[in-house]
Amino acid sequence: MWSDGDPFLVRYESADGVIRGARPTRVIGERNGYLATWLPAATPVAVPVLADGRGLRECSLEDRYTLPRASRVEPWRGEGIVMLFPRAAAHSIWLFRQAGGEFWGWYVNLERRHAWHPRGCDTRDHVLDLWCERPRQWKWKDEQELEQAVEHGVVSAAGAAEIRGEGERVARMIERWHSPFCDGWEAWQPDPFWPVPALPDDWQL
Ligand code: MG
Image 1 (cartoon, helix red, strand yellow):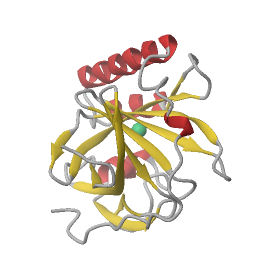
Image 2 (spheres, protein in one colour):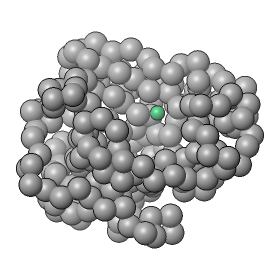
Image 3 (cartoon, protein in one colour):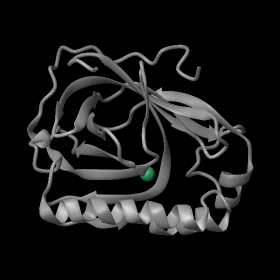
């Protein structure tokens, strides 16, 4: 379905049920059931913000989960990332690089099972994440934020248990150094002449 070089738009539903985030990327391949895409530095991305303009990490949790939201388009900060999407599982994996481009680590973003469409896929962030800097080692990230999301009724207790279960499943993949972690994506290098992907005007539609 996807060929190398195809534009691939990843869209994120926000806590209010509206698509408010988007990342335009480029397909770079598929290995062992994971589609890989590339998000270069400075790519214009849409991020969810509060309607009053504050970022979601610049306000209280009360405000984060109760005030109306909007979107803002801004350049992707930091180095480019390879993003890995499983065909049918509730996570994606982002390969972070340090300034200068050296590989840093695997960030497992727990998120809703992807809804695939002709432009890419839609998902929703599941708050809890995992971080892996060395083969077979991992740790949770943002555990407290998931608890707070449950307290605010944004995630149900049953939903949180499912999210943790998916995290545990990926943790076992890391411990066994299973695909896609052992697939060599950390050595992949972009063509420096590729243009930065464009965010389509109708990304929200
Ligand atoms: Mg996350």
